[in-house]
Amino acid sequence: MKKVEALREFKSTLPVGQWFDYWTLQLMWSEFKDSLHRDGRITDYQYNNWGNQSQYGRTVCLLNNGRWWYG
Image 1 (cartoon, rainbow, N blue to C red):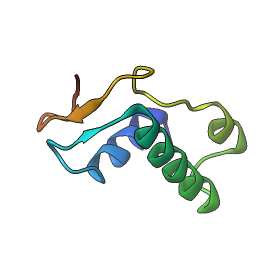
Image 2: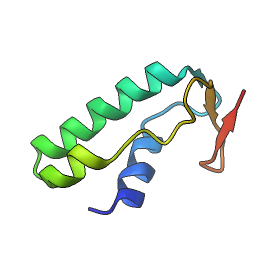
Image 3: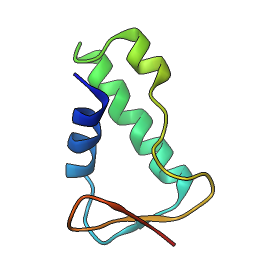
Image 4: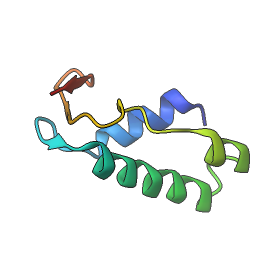
């Protein structure tokens, strides 16, 4: 699985229009990566090197078009 595919799948699990702080999103991304790794869908390297896509310390909202909106 490529990172872009993982991000698309991750975003599909988030409610559109809800705001998340950086740390909450970081935890959710880590849990999502862990599930992909445990299911054998990503490698050890991918698991250890894919970081959070959110900007540090900022709140973020997922828009209808799948893009992040920073507050």
